[in-house]
Image (cartoon, rainbow, N blue to C red):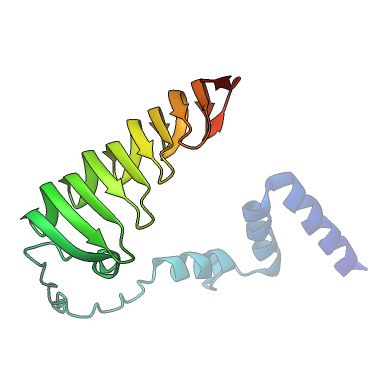
Length: 198
């Protein structure tokens, strides 16, 4: 019965004094204090903290080998697509790019004569399809833009605003086969108004 009272007393002491003080009180009740020459739990705890843990030896620094540098070509290589599409070119080149005034003959029979910049149709020029349709006007990065003139084999003509290769904005269309013309606005290649007779 005395054991049960001691345990109850320890629990009350732990709550009352805190864990550290309760451990010290329990050591005193067991007769394991430093006065009697015995090692206490708190002594063991502090000894384990004061022991130095040997450091892990570091591996000696090795020189890291740099990968060999890849050679950079001094001049730009012509894109594979240009090699496949373009049959021939007459004109100037700067760093292997088509530059300035030039004439290109494409596979399939289409041609371009006009200004080129960085290998692209850029500026004023004339593009003629193999079937005879012709565009004369402004190009921006290979695309007909701004103002231009389309001419078809049947004699039909469109002259006016162009966006992304399509009639877009204000322009005039005259049919080569019928007495019909359209003067007005276009939206993505389609008339945006009424047709008038000549």
